[in-house]
Image 1 (cartoon, rainbow, N blue to C red):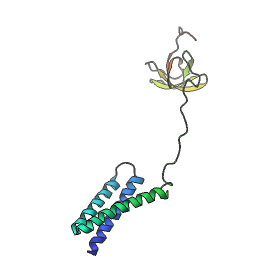
Image 2: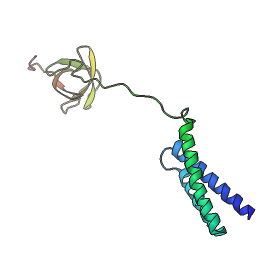
Image 3: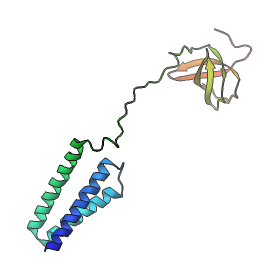
Image 4: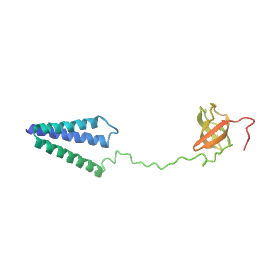
Length: 162
């Protein structure tokens, strides 16, 4: 009887530890979560095979023990050393805010296949060709600006300057 209780206690404690590791440390569903669930189920089922009273006590004690450990770890901030606590306070600058507008002339600084880099008014932006690939150092004209995209085409002699 004492050995049965020791086995049940070991299984439940191992289950609680594995489930808490799964929740707080490991992303997704891993072997720790599956193992914790199997240990908990095995401990509770084994407790019910010993007697119904021990099974009921084990089930309630496992729930209370898990909840207590869970709330203790949440309150204790012991995971604040390993948790990601950075705030992202940056933003994306629109090409319109950079002063790039339809009709501006520039030059590609990388191959546009169909997206690459181009420079307009000494500002390098991501440019997208209208369909054809363009090599580096090709003069281009802005056809339109759509949100964060600058659509360009190669500059030709008959391109009208705005």
